[in-house]
Length: 266
Length: 319
Image (cartoon, rainbow over all chains, first blue to last red; front, side, top):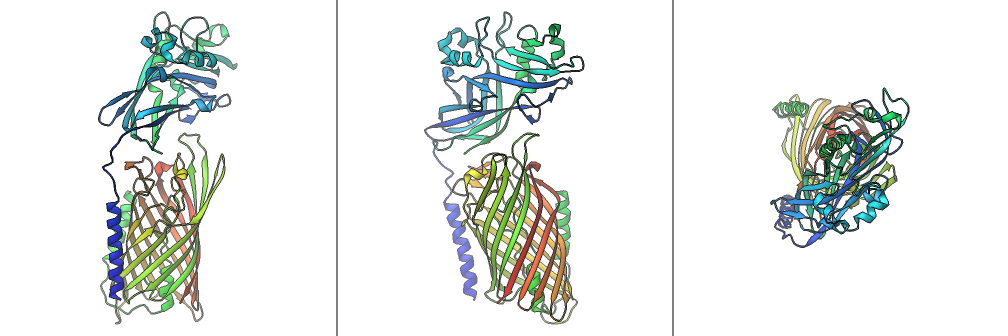
């Protein structure tokens, strides 16, 4: 009977040993892998639903959004040791379109294996790259044309397209709005955002992490700077914000639009 | 947590109370019934189901039983304020046995079969299969002996292992829903347990504390370590042909964060406190038990998981 107890203890001890010996914490990290950055559009704390969802801003304007697209570019990843990996610029253009579920994940390939703690990206096309001409942006010009992300009346890309209808205390009939950002005569309006990851993105040959970014589109007009659509409703024809002094403010607002919800290492 | 500490303090007081050496348990059936008193499975889904079942102490006889338990949860399927809540049902049928090896040592075995389902916007998901088997030894370090005092005590310490016989499917815990929608954790886990029972004639209190050390599974996923505690008041109506034991108590569970590839995963820790009520009925060698557990307060996965209730029914046969 005592033997049984001894046996039980022995089994416990042996299995504890087996477990502790099977740990391989000293893995050598080599090779490359894939990494996805998902852009999940939200309005405030709610998931964004196009067309039907009524979204209220802090100025009590009620927006129904029919279209939200933006160009993500210049993705730069930082490892835990501070090493920086710049994704090839000409392959780094992604048009995120809420209406097209296949577009919302920026899929990066041939990323050096490692533990990444930071991601930086641009919204729009930076000026230096733009000045290289269309070839500097890979096939972006073609894709942007198809997505309606090229200005029709002047050279340049639309960086953000934000459209729908709105009502407010002073605009009681459902009225269209269009916010398009991009370069103007006075401002270039490209901006970059750096986000810390809450947990490491562990790129390996066998692990393709996904960084889940929430893009709170309310921030476009309702961020650090509050822009009332009602004030831009010229002649009651709709609020069209495609230039002027509001664009740099909207561009500044984009810095607060993105947060990382979590990272999957699957 | 504050509340939990208060309960813990209460339990400790209870443990230190009473020294009298006493009569052993009067009736065999009384002992048997007390076995059913402790019941906790893992919150967040019985991925390690049964590992935290209180391995109650008072049975001296060979024993085998069948138990069904159901756990109902609601989990938020997504990260947004308007993300839908998903209802989850965790069902377990368990064969459990308790076999004395010596007068002081008992071996318990739990063999679960799991069948879980949940309703997502994309349709119903079902998983089923053999769960993780637990084997555990409990040793009586202190027991009141024959004499005649007012209080009867028994203190048991034990340990065990949970074997990854259940399938762990990585696909079920990607995404943002309840990570524990699994029939097994895929890991070898180790349990440490203590049980203390004090009785005065027909009235008793059974108290248990246990801790489960969970290890990494082959998919490099590691469920958080789990601390369970509980205390149950019971009373025996010892009638000529039937024994009836109503019982009421509290039970709590505290979870550490899960991790994957050694990285702690946010929003996976939590704690929950239940009230519990039950009834045991014994006739000849059979006993029938029903139990229910209702949450008093809970913070599971940053409140993205809510336990609704648990209930169980079991039939045991004393060999």
